[in-house]
Length: 155
View 1 (tube, rainbow, N blue to C red):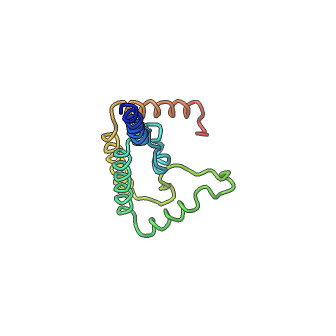
View 2 (cartoon, rainbow, N blue to C red):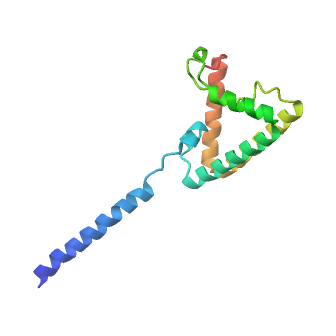
View 3 (cartoon, one colour):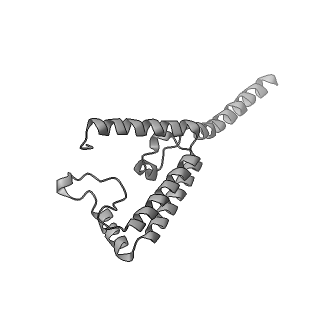
């Protein structure tokens, strides 16, 4: 009788372990940042899915707030600039970073409002990060500043 139970017990154990391994592997594997975070240069922070979602919401809210500051003509021009970004042969096909406000002829009031929205967004994003992630972000910022000081052209 024991000879019949032992193989069944071993099979049951093997099946239960085998079926729990994929769930364990899924739950512990780091998630790859979504493409929007690569654009945002935050992929090195290993954001959790919740952090990614919250930051994505903050960024969407920021875009909406800034669009509400712009005139209809400025919005159209900004859209054209974003569509053409990186298409210039003079730029070597490289995409520019930033918001693209340089050519919009913003008023002083618009600049101040946009700066306030950006500062608020930055503070909200930093509040989502852990202390360790904030430290990593600050270190990356300092490294970038040091590189730019060593290479004034920014390339």
